[in-house]
Image 1 (cartoon, rainbow, N blue to C red):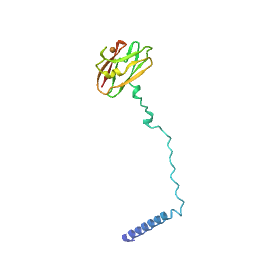
Image 2: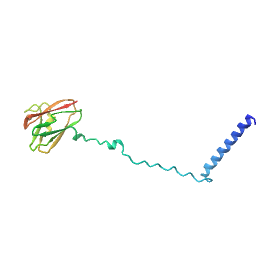
Image 3: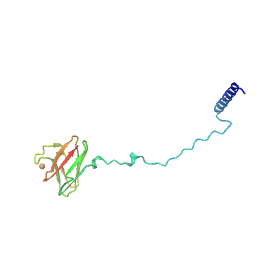
Image 4: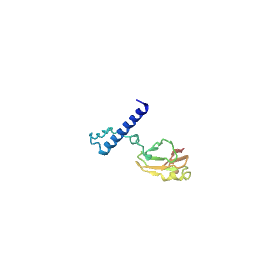
Length: 149
Ligand SMILES: [Cu+2]
């Protein structure tokens, strides 16, 4: 068998096969049953990482508790743009005011926290880096500092 004949036979076979497949595809696979669809592998539902990582609401972060003995923590460090929440856990009223007693003019936004009755809480956000001193106006010896980085 010559080389040319072999190549010719291969070509003919390829053309016949191609034609066969073309005809089969046109007929919609009439001679053979249609292949069953690949069964879907059902993965058990696993919660994604973003769903499981519960983000703490910002308002509950950076909490300063107020008791009869003062602010806890007395010095708190936060990141720029975060908030500090003061929570009055005492039975008495407390009043957060900016330094310096009694004029409170060093950082006036701190004065918006102001009076906190027993059980009350209030937050203040700090958009700029700095060190902010405050005190309990009703007990001026109780002082605290917010450091914003
Ligand atoms: Cu004061």
